[in-house]
Length: 102
Image (tube, rainbow, N blue to C red; front, side, top):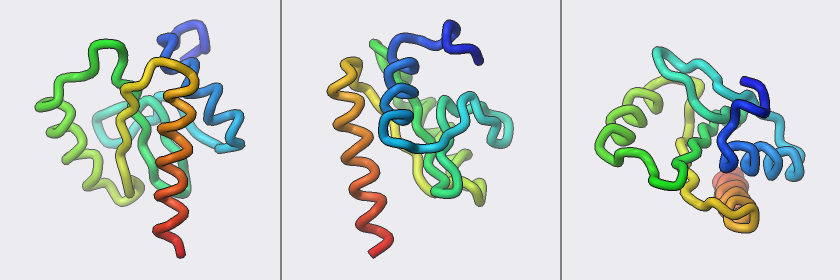
């Protein structure tokens, strides 16, 4: 997916991930789904939920299928639209991830 094809939220998430120095894949295939961002080897899926968010019921079903894949350890949905909100969500996510390793 080219950057011009991204939603504004996805562009901001990619920019924040870059700023944090994280390596990631975009539109990464896992089973029959494509996830917005995949951070390996941590196995973290990041989904941009957009202005209106996704449908919680279908998200939950999709997440249940994704988490069954060995390469996925965690799924995180970002609802924030501002760059500051997105960066805050990512820092919080990776702070929690670091605590798991201790």
